[in-house]
Length: 177
Ligand SMILES: [Zn+2]
Image 1: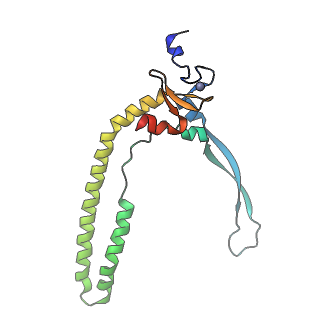
Image 2: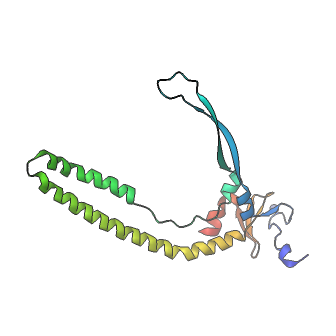
Image 3: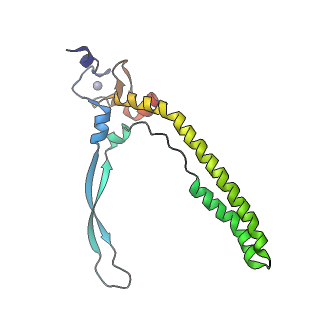
């Protein structure tokens, strides 16, 4: 037996018959299932509800457990920032609409909007830099993930070169943190 194959033996049961590549099991865990949904009739009609057949992608529990380390993502603050701006701007806009010469009250809104926009842009720039710094270690983690194997018999994930292993549900914390 070639030595690289010998390394693929499960570190617990020492067998090879139930050992599969983690990335392959992850990929095969996705399937499409059809389901039926009742669509209510348009309001004001007496039509019967329509039975519609739709498709959705489902992921098996095992595939979910064996998911790759999550790719670093910049946190997007645009929506919370716009919401905050609206909350801050409303009182000023009410004053502007209420009083004569209320145009002056719009100036703080413009200033706050400008400051928030500037702050939001610099925040997003920092987030992008943070993600760029995390990418090399994520790529290393992906390399490791692609080299991991899973034993169905013992529900463990292991790294053949050094025999390090953990239960499938602990894979993320054991190998990637
Ligand atoms: Zn085993």
